[in-house]
Structure formats: structure tokens, C-alpha cells
Image (cartoon, rainbow, N blue to C red; front, top):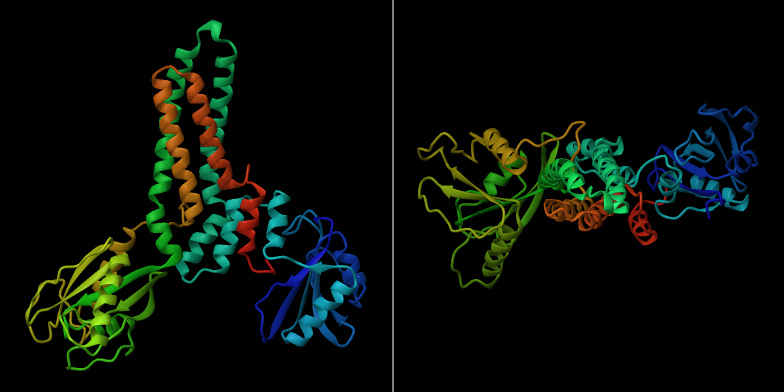
Length: 431
């Protein structure tokens, strides 16, 4: 399949000012030459303005060639920047297919880049994360990953373990020289350092997952504590209906804001109380469910009638004393009505969620697959540490091999076809 030339729309589908159609493969130049009237002027990386004959229509386009191996996929790559009418770019794709290309599968361009050694598997996954980033922090973390931050950290550990594996092979091949005890003594510091490095990577996932997916913040409290007013104040707009009547909010309302590049999704919930109203009771049940799954719960307490509501959650709880406009409160108290203390509250939410662990150029795990594999590698090395402590080099060798296998699946060094198929199937067609 790699010998086939593929094509797809690389820009977003729909109508716009400009669309980009991409081709990759050995016939990219000849196919483009068959319909672009100034193909003789194409040079590597240089845009050429000219007419493209798509059969039923023509368009004035910019075309560019990137010749192998200096291209995204490592193959000859052609791009056509045309007007963004679906009628135009679809006609160009049909023309390319008629001249010998086929429609690309999801993620096939990036998969070819991975298979050509242009990027590791974790870097390829970061490409998808960057495309799908919903906040500046998520985009920056994906960029760090795409530029090799995680790959460098994992490869450094992998290389140390690979060298250690070679030393163990020598020790096992010559048991008569009684080198097992010496090998264990020399290997233990390396294993322990690698365990510490893996645990540090694993510890970054708590913040990394929130950066990638966003932070869910549930707002809970008694009726009329000011939950909806607090949501509106945090958003800076009137999203939730606010009245003096208790029980106005009957269902959960979700809205998002971005703070310091991180996406926070607020969940306004029904006031918690005993009620015979069926709709309100359902809302109270949803409040409890939202609190259980939230990363952070804002427990809103009315300063004029302070009652602290019990909250069941696996996340962190921030007590928000509200209504300083009508009652005295401490330094962290707020007024959702006037906006007093809201900026400080946003900072508290941010620090509680991420603990200041925002990466800029450093290694951070944001992907659940990587997290599981790093934990697997650390567990294998813990077994190796036990084996080395008992001078059981054969058992330690098996455990180190297990750690190498796990880390190789992060970078793609030993990824199986089914894993690659699953990862790249989640990419868009044009990437």
C-alpha cells in the first residue's frame, strides 16, 4: 500500500476562503503535472501560481511540491491550495483519483511519516492532540510532545535499560565466572534511577490529563446559596437564570471558560434539599452525580445563613463563602453578585486542579495509553530490583525485557499492527 499515491482534503471540510488538497506517494508529481498547467516550474518547497484543470471546472491555485525524503511523509508530497468551495476541492480530488491516486485512509499521511522514521509513535499521537486541542495549554502540551519532549525522556530510560540488558546477557552467558553478584551490584543503581524517572513521568499525568481534556468543576450547595450567580460571574456572562425563588435550577448546566490557557467546564447543579417535586428531585440526584465525577467541587456557602453541605466526591473540594455584599466574610470570601473575589477564586481553582504543573518544553504525559505503559514499565523494574537484590540475574533480565517492551510501545519501536491501526484510525482523513 505504501507504493500507492494517496490524496485527501487536508483543511477542514466545508466552505471557506481556501482549501488544501494533499497527495503523497511516488506518483504525486506526475499526477499533479497531469492537471496543473505550470508544473514545469515546480521546485521543492516553492509555491507556484497557476491554473489547475479539474475536468469539469478550473481554478486558479497555488501548488507546491515537497520531494522525498524532505517531506512530512518522507515521500514525494504535493499540495494544492485552491478556493474553498466544496465543488472545487472535491473536483480536484476526483481528478487526482482519475489520474492514479486513491483516497487516503484516516491518519494515513501521519502513519507513513511514522513508518518512514520521520517521527516516533508518541510524536505522531501528539500531532492528533494538537489538531484536537481545545485550549492553549492543551495545544502547548501537544506541541511539546510533537517536538519530542516525551520521546526524549522515554528514549533516555530505554537506552539505559538496553545497555543494562546487554550486560546481563553477558553475565548469563558466562555463569562459571560468578559475575551475577557483581552484575546485580552494578545494575541496582541504574534500575532505581530509571524507576524514579518513570514515577516522575507518571506523576505528571494528573495535570497532563486535565490539560488535554479540561477540568470539570461542579458547583453545589443549598438552594439560593448563589450557585448560578457564581457560574455567571466566573464566566463573565449571564448564562444561568438567577431568581430569588429557591429551586430555579432543575437540571445541570455546563459552560466553559479558559484561564491561563486551561479549559474549565463549570457544572451548575440544582440546590440540594428534600423535595416532593419530581423534576427538582431528579435535579438534586444529578447534582450528587456531578459532584462524584468532578475534578473539583465548589461548595457554595451562603454567608448570611452558613450551612456546610456534605459532599461525596473523588475530587478536591473548595469551600466558596458567598454574598459578601450582604454579610461579613473572610479573605477568601466572594460576592457572585458584585464580582468581589472572583479573580482570586479562579486562581484557587487553577492551582487546585494543576498544582502549578504546566509544562513548557518539558516531558509531560497527557495520553492515557502512555500513562499505562509507563506504569507497566515501572512495575517491571520494581520486579527487576527485587531480583537483583537476590542476585537472580535471570529473573531480573526477564523483568528488564518487560520494561523495554512497555517503553517500546510508547515510542512505537515495537508497536503491533493492531495498535497502529487503532491509533491512526482516530486521525482525520487528511492528516
